[in-house]
Length: 109
Image (cartoon, rainbow, N blue to C red):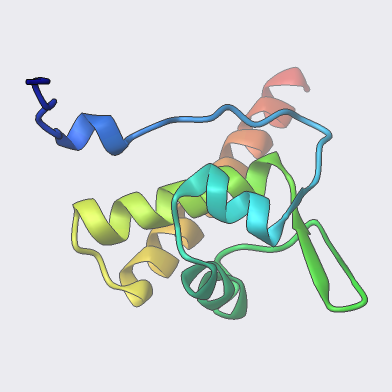
């Protein structure tokens, strides 16, 4: 009689690294992030994720988009933050990055 393995939550988590300069199809983004096609399209429509390219109706995603999808899904599923809250968090993070860039620039003067 074979002994069956008990499934654990960590068994389903497989982090796949993405590579800079590579574009991934929508189906590849689904595979890389574990997020449904529908949710990725919702994230794009809401402006939280920007496809790197859109040609003939087909979207492709770069490294930044894949990481953004992963962040959104973490905030939504693990922390229970709604889309409005996630948009606010992303806006604040972008503003913070702009301020950091300004500070680096001003320090060089």
